[in-house]
Length: 411
Image 1 (tube, rainbow, N blue to C red):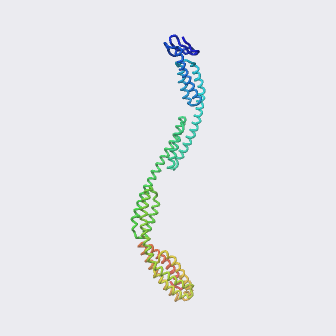
Image 2 (cartoon, rainbow, N blue to C red; image 1 turned 90 degrees about the vertical axis):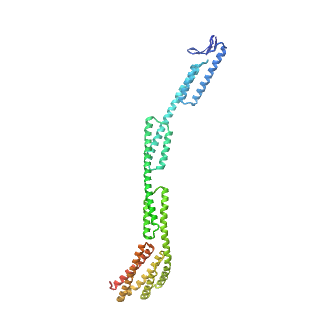
Image 3 (cartoon, rainbow, N blue to C red; image 1 turned 30 degrees about the vertical axis):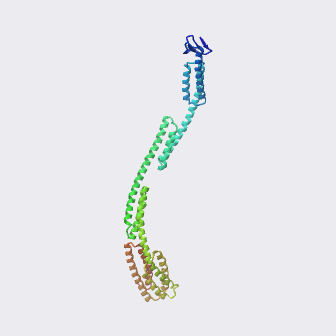
């Protein structure tokens, strides 16, 4: 029999034993060989186990393994040590492994405490996510809200789970908020689509009306119709952007075609009226020479002649109408003011002259009113505007003449 100091022996029949504190047990068979070689072989196995135990201990002490991984690894290696077919101080290796358990337990408690902190932090974070989601659920930020809810969902997924009751309760609130927002968002866009379709139909009809009106030469009536169409267009609301742009181009093209034709016609009339303006400018220069009035009678006779020629000269371009009429009216007022005293002093003649003036102005007004009715009937807004200005001036003259006639005891 050959023995290894302290831990093993080889019996005469070749059985290899390892000694333990409670006795010895066989670990292998080495028949017909060198007993020293047998012990060396089994001691080498022990050395391999010792290296494995040392490496495991170092990894656990360094924190490279989780408590769960460390516990399972120690149990596995200890089992292999206790039943190892090796010669050496196996109980020492087992004791080394057992000494790691307090460290593992400490790490487990630390992990549990860290987990509790993280869970609490996760609970606060999830409660904040739920609060924000519930606010978004009642908002009308349809684009930004959807993007933000997607971000909140990803943040939720990145957080650790809580205990099941708490996690389920918070998730129910979070999910309900998302559902509420999604339902409201779908309803909003559904209603928006309906409004846009209604706006599209209304604007399509308006564009068609504008196209039908575009060729008209009833300038006044059609101008009013286009103003009404524009008011209705603005009230129709917005369609889809592409539809809006197409319909607006149609509407605007019809609008511009009509007003372009009207403006061209007005320019043509203004060109025709330019000669009338030259005549009235000359008459105005002649009338303004009467100022200041010296001889009221002579001024009145001269001005009457100028006024007759002024009426006969006809209409002038719109741009010059106001200036010419206002200057002519100033001369007229000055002449009339100078003549008032004379009229009052010569009652019979004054009455006759006043009556003659009233009659002439009434005839002039009647003719102008007929002309205005004709211009309005044909939609000639330029002629109508000029005629209204003439009527206003003549009415002012008639009022003054009528007052003078009453002063002389007239009707």
